[in-house]
Length: 89
Image (cartoon, rainbow, N blue to C red; front, side, top):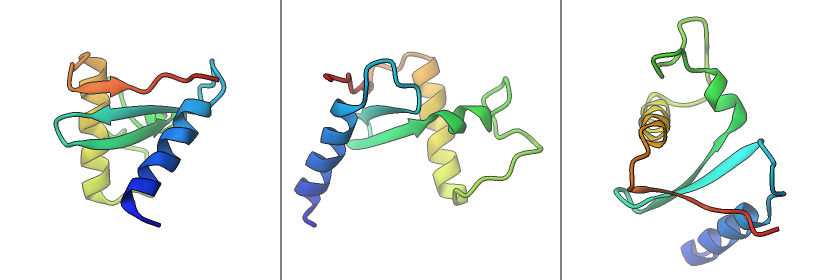
């Protein structure tokens, strides 16, 4: 699948999620020029300081964990470079 088709498919999934669904939130990071999503369970692996909780293991690589934590922190801080993808269904 071409990269443009992957982006279109990802956006379609994001736009068509039911309004009020809390399973996954979709975003665009203007700083890195990337689309990404955060699933509900990602939030639960962090402590109150937005670090990986000491008793948690994840399926993510260290690079993915670092990126995820950075993005969650930026979302919490209302970084204008992180755009939320609104649902239309």
